[in-house]
Length: 347
Image 1 (cartoon, rainbow, N blue to C red):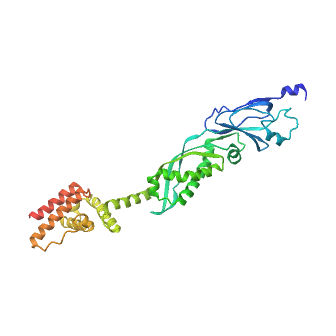
Image 2: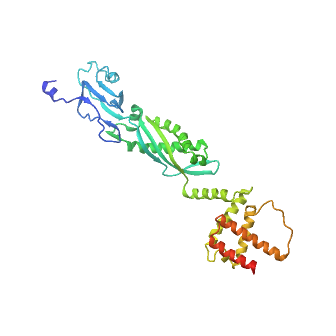
């Protein structure tokens, strides 16, 4: 090679990556027709790793530090090339830099609910949201499985793939864990722990290390949440009896009172005035059973008709006051019905 041709050659003496753009995980050094000078310097900063690729095959991987490129520092590449001139001439090789910094605060969520079996509700569709952190742990594997020969590979691109892996792993993990939804909702750390182990294994197959994984919220679709709220309310308001079905019936009757009260005329206006109001009161009293009257009270001996009528109205007044105290009727309904009962009692 003449002196003129030698001068025209362009050599690379220092290879380094300054990471000017945030969110880039892999970056290929722009070689073009440049050649790496024997004895050139490779600078790999902390939170970086560099990979030498020759003809599509990973030859060497370098960690943080300053590396002088010689036959001693590139033994694998030397063997691949079968060079016998000990780098007397320049050489070419694709060089990729990888950012190994932890990518923190990355959001994840379930765009569509995940259907899982549940011991309390049989089948439920769960939605969840949270945060996770990850990093490139194995650049060789990451290059082979995900980033490839692209000039630039970004965080957004890899997370498109990670979300699919995350959803599939979460469905499998939660489905096999048999953790009830109520336990997951009450202890989100339990759900995160259950998923994180399986997710770490799934990410590891692509050279990615899962640093943190947490669950911020677990919820049901709106229609299922409404049904669950109704069931919980039934247990709180109507579950005092031994029979749960009877409790739920009492809850439904009690829930109907505010709706009836919203009609024109209130409780007393249902049907034909006071008579219909009394009927509703009797229905509520029978449905709520012992909740409004002492269960163990002995049966009183039959009294005279006038006294029985008085006692009956007084009892109704007591029950009416109980409904008001429980918030099952409004003050206006209470006052209206009370006035009608007192009028009936006094005559």
